[in-house]
Amino acid sequence: MKINYFSKIRILDGGMGQTLLTNGLKPKGSLWSATALIEEKYHQLVVDTHLEFIKSGVDVIVTNNFSARRVRMAQNNVEEKFDYANKKAGELASKAREISKKEVLIAGSLPAQNDTYVADQRDEELIEKGFYDQAILLKPFVDFYYLDVLSSGKECEIALNVIQKLNLPVLVGLHIKKNGRLPSNESLDEIVKKYKNKNWLGLVLACVSPEIIENSFDKIKKINLPFGYKANLWKSEEPVPVHKFASPADKVASNPVETMGTRKDYTGEKFLEFSKRMMNKGATILGGCCETKPLHIEKISSLKN
Image (cartoon, rainbow, N blue to C red; front, side, top):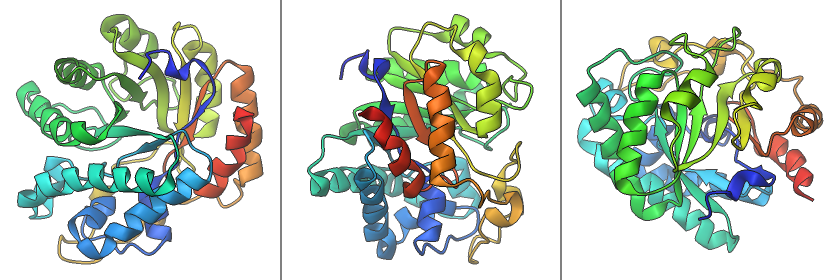
């Protein structure tokens, strides 16, 4: 793919995990969306949910392996399913693209390798192994990698070094808080200056509320890269790691909405108006994360025309 792919308006998908739950997935323990990869009875549901987003007008779908990181699999006593689950995420995304006959791209999700929304303080070699093991399994199926809700420069540097060895481009997704800084307390400017390389396709604010995105855009538009967002619609403006509230590994888990809430008032039309404002500030990468459904993405797909 061309490195300037995101220099024009492109639509990313929304929140696969939460949409899977809406569509009938019963997650186990803290596996969340990875349950749909491990249990074969849900494989068609993953394909159908990718297809929902494709039909809503996306240019890019993201593989459904966000919770198939090794640490989460170990927490739920299914670490032996790690290779199977991550490979299956690539296979099911590819199957959906093939069925759709649309020219959508597939982004390989490389999530934070420990908890979400907090900086990973573990040993660098352990983090590197996590990124590499997921990346190598996804590589046959993806057009580029997506750093999926990373919270520190340390994680970015490790992941980017892994990706450089695999010779694929990368869209960098960073999580920020209300103060406009990563959970590690680094600024977006710091991350770009330290770690930007020739493989970067662009930068998105990942799993961040529309309000925090809007308040941060004057900073992000100065970085001389295509930029945008995958906005969440949690009621909680500063979300916390969901697994802390999860059920035991062998029990059906609660929906994270019970912890974080959801913004039922944030209609597709409201998401469209938000996205128009962001486009006017220069955003070219538009999409959603948790609680952003196909109905939201369908509305913003009209902005490509």
